[in-house]
Length: 137
Image 1 (cartoon, rainbow, N blue to C red):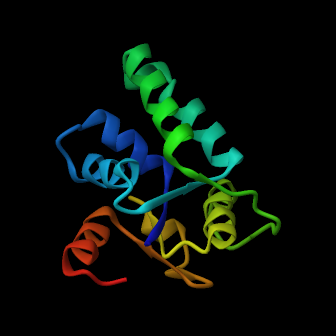
Image 2: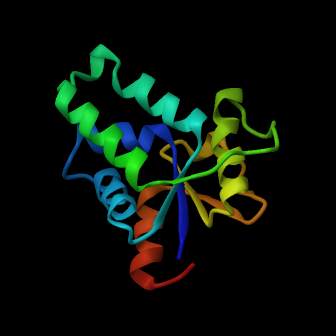
Image 3: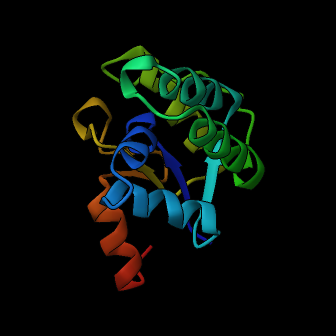
């Protein structure tokens, strides 16, 4: 099964635009079509960011989203620290991807990441969906 790590911006975009491509990627991950991989650091960031008042999401939507992610995602515990991103806060996504042996790290900010980390390709949401439609890894 294809394993993916979703950057926080994908999760936030999915909540802000439920009919957009990030929402489709999140639904693919939560439906089990791909294996959604998270670490405790990523879960903490998801929670902190989607609770920010300026996103104006209903508490029930936030709670249901976090509950679904916690229940349905594959949890990993990264053992290596990575220092490869322009923003040090983004390294946790590469750490998770490496620990999970993820095929893809999906982000809306590809320029913040290397194009590839170990066996994980860094892709945008549209590219992930196109790859899944084409049946490619």
